[in-house]
Length: 441
Image 1 (cartoon, rainbow, N blue to C red):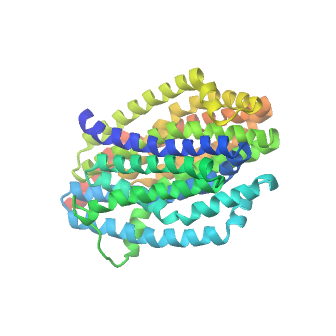
Image 2: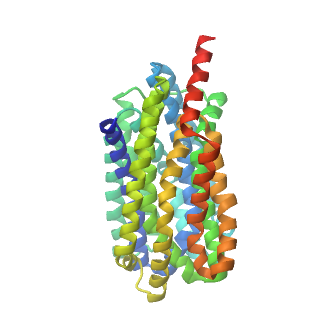
Image 3: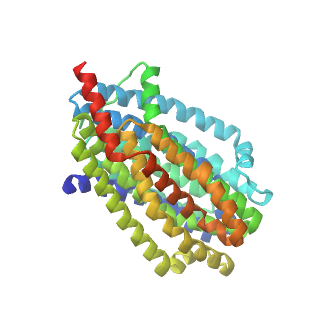
């Protein structure tokens, strides 16, 4: 099981790390080539771009869990149909989103809370980012389906090539051509086009079970995989809410310097978040496949392995934050006030990832189990209920410093609550018993 887990989890985690790394490179180039205000502007737009990533993840995991389940059950025709439904629907949806973002960019940025000083830069970044909505979303989905189709290394390679393209173009557009903040958005979009170009031959040449083909959209099936995948969207949406709430509190207690510091923290912590998310995405096809085979022992085994691995990664991140924090922060800014504020925030916030890793693993596991209600509950608790309460209480007691500890409290409380309400082992056996009874009937 360990060999099988690492065959899928390592390429997935590495792909997510590389994906987040070129987001960090964006931050470095923007911070050094455009300025701290541009970093803050991207952080204003971050909740929206994260929600787009969540939308793609919703279809990738919702459809992917069903694809792996049907392959495990020996029903490959159903798996192919699900893939084609997801691809066609997301292609249409991403085109619509792109148009809306281009036309209503200023209104969207205002809703995200941009100050007058940040609005112009935020509008410029989002408008050019929106032009590439289709490859940005399709790249995430195809990468996930390639992984579910038994080729995790190809998913990793496509992401790495896209990242390399992005990094090279980032440097050229910002430093050589002087495109400013829009250069970062354009580089990201062109990098995703390379990712899509690498993945498409897998489906055209029928290297696995899945292939392209025209299908009539079936809204019952769309509803099914959307329901299963919705927690992935909700998880990213809740992260957007977390960023938005922090931005509001930072403006109130610290000002634009606080937002700049928080944007640096997001660039650094995003790497760890995406590695943890990558581990769960790597385990998902294995869990879904064994769900199709009705092998509860292996399902729970993969859940346990993922939890242990996530904890090891989180401990390593805490160590890096304390020892190398000033060096990492110095890459993004030379302002001593912002650097000092960011280092304090990083040391405090890093401890939250001990709970984040297990919460993400549990969320995706219940999706693979086709029991999304517990995954949705986790998202509601961590962003809408516990975080605002934690921030209010901690800021009342500790002032501005309380902002940085809010995530620790909300994630730990979420972990405890879900552990009490949703027993992973019991839920697994209960679902398998129900399925067995339905088969006998």
